[in-house]
Image 1 (cartoon, rainbow, N blue to C red):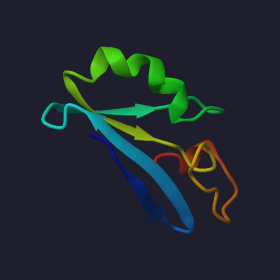
Image 2: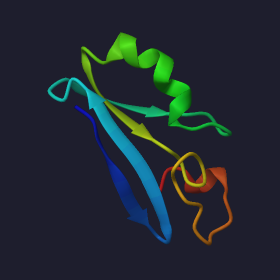
Image 3: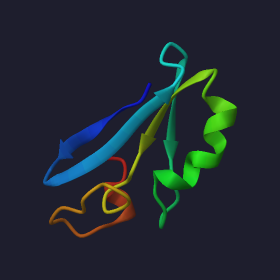
Image 4: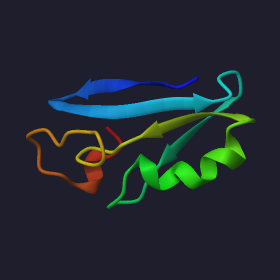
Length: 78
């Protein structure tokens, strides 16, 4: 079962997806600087039975919007 949606932060919509073992230990998966959560698909098979996988498209990547703030690595933790 997958759960997905958007979290509004400042004026950006940050996309997330939760899958795997929803009763397992949570594991947040972040893609590289020029990628998206799709880059992490190959490891899903190896982790899904044990972990509750939380994928996030960083601001301005994949299904997340950029918003009006200039993109920078300092914004990623927000």
